[in-house]
Figure (cartoon, rainbow over the protein chains, first blue to last red):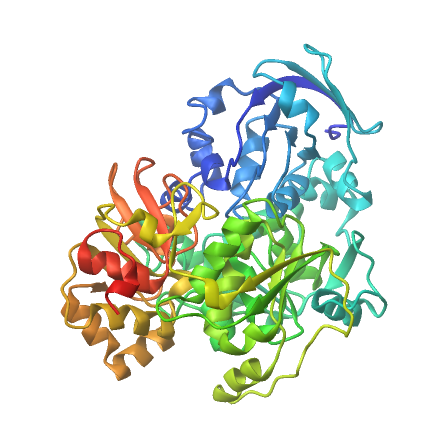
Length: 171
Length: 415
């Protein structure tokens, strides 16, 4: 599996302030401790009921400001990846989630243009080599700075586990 | 070279001046994880085929604090694995009941001024109170820091928060933190380090500073660093430890600044669903309250319960009231001082140090549409139980006042 250099996927439009609690509530983490797969049905359950069944490989989260705010729980990024999410586009992304996204092979993109013009179901095209993201249904287009150096290599590998398997420890 | 505390600390690590915005590979002085984040760290290493033995076991600490003692069989099994891993690898383990990681890292003097620390918990920023560059990471980053001794850090922009004056009676550093959250906003400090300066620092003890650093992540901050000054040295001296002084260089350059006069602050309260929605407590007086929670890594220290006891002494609570001192050391201090007796006489339920109530893991979950006043740091929907429960964040004074009256109350009327 090679990472999201160029992908096309369906958008899931979320609002502002989606915390890691919204993505996966702490109460499931502690009720289902140690069984990541058992938490999948609760992914984004209060935001988009049934999300884990509807999401497909290559889908894109498009959110407002403050995405991934809150707890450091990496389960949030990991479960999104398990559900098929390859790209998160948001007006702003909190830093621990940003790191966790990279480590789980999800490309984080900061953009104001795309969230402003995207609805759930729109086709989103991302080209990480060119640093361009386009909403194919509305024609909205934005440039972004891909994560630098090592971070992008980790994303391209599909996450830190895959990166280490192929190339050994990163430092 | 811009000379902020963040840069002073990083310059020592790198042996050169760091450049703002660069991604630097940095040696880490200490890594800590807990029962909620260590299992995923071990799973990641296993999947990657990397042995989980730390590069230097003396620089790793593990805590069983998130759901502890085990409230379920699932948690008990996780705890067992955590204990076995720590024993096999010579890693220091603080088992259930010893205390909440961030509190123990400071009061057992594991964290010291000038250190670079990563913790697999977002509230690792708490340790900035003692002059450490401490930041939260996920399980993968903590696992890598553990086995390699290093992590990557983006050299952050710095927001200077200049403090003047002194806190008025009935007003605390929690009110400062909530006020700051309303000023900076949920995303205002993303990727930034916050640093505190000014004459107002002298009146804030280490425990007060921990509350402020703790809440910086609610503004997006990577770290929230206080200088190591007379206050810091006096605190460590009381633990029998000598620490160095640490200050920004003269003429340090900041990317942004905020100025707060502590004398003008008043008791604050954050409405759900976010800490940044803070306003004066007097504007919310009369809101009926079902449960009060006194504790957490934000406000579970001895000084916090002394404040609560000032309000609750000779009164009976009119709500459910749960007090969870952040560590056994705090608990024992309060026992000796008679504070536990005051809280118990008032009708509070007193438990051991755990993160449980704050994260809805155990010990007092909220039912649908119930209202809580909590001294913790987050009031997201569902945080403490039902998604329709409402959580208000406040200082120990304001929370205790709500317990004493059954409604949100400006605590100054009871002092």
